[in-house]
Length: 320
Ligand SMILES: NC(=O)c1ccc[n+]([C@@H]2O[C@H](COP(=O)([O-])OP(=O)(O)OC[C@H]3O[C@@H](n4cnc5c(N)ncnc54)[C@H](OP(=O)(O)O)[C@@H]3O)[C@@H](O)[C@H]2O)c1
Image (cartoon, rainbow, N blue to C red):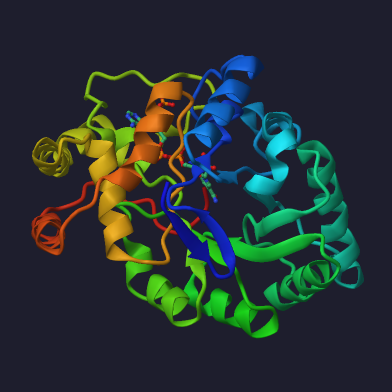
């Protein structure tokens, strides 16, 4: 697969979001299935894997997802880039470095590695961002992490953090129906050589065109029950966007999900999406979006058509 750089870290052009093996999209697969799916992705050329310490069933407990990833990748560790995230509940001001280091040591143990490639702060907490940035800088100096990042943040926070310890990547929600980051954040990242890693790039499934208004999501631990674009009425409202993707999918001999990923890959050179799926075939389908190349003309037409369509539902940068 083609490669891209998140600052100085080389990754496959499309990464793999591993969350759904543990949380967020209903029933989780058997561990052996998840491990095999991750290995298949690696063998297909994926070298960028995304997890977080809090990804566990129902967000209760710690590290379910990191353990799976650790088992799947331990013997190819040197060939892959692993990103994990730290969730802070506010730390005593004098203990920020030690507190973050304790979280990191837990992640390293579960991931069966001695370093992380990218360590994100999952959400802002009451701990000032400058203190977090300082601690991350120290962890980089110690060789425990290669780089660091922030998730679901606005440009003011990014700028404050960047001034203390230069960032490797920002991981925000971004897709054809969640474009807040286009205004200031992605341009800031381009200007400062920071990678941008879109999460939920397929809008939790909407942009695959496979979700219909009669679709029942699972009752337990399924974020699609509250993703705004996936209410019955908004699925219907967003159909023109899905139809647009289907039209391009036909022209490009691709799938709607692939077109939605190819669109962002064409649009920005510093973007590396991490689509999530717990289905082996769809994981490969999503990785293969790297092979779907839009010409400048196709991109411009797609962009113009998209801009003319109303998006129903907005999640934005606040909260989960
Ligand atoms: N930083 C953060 O706060 C944050 C928040 C959320 C997620 N993330 C990260 O971002 C990754 C991706 O986000 P996400 O999983 O929320 O959203 P996503 O990638 O936009 O969508 C995932 C959903 O779409 C479906 N899907 C994926 N590819 C498909 C395809 N080709 N055809 C049909 N359906 C498809 C999946 O179903 P199936 O499983 O049935 O294929 C799943 O229900 C996560 O794994 C996680 O690592 C980070």
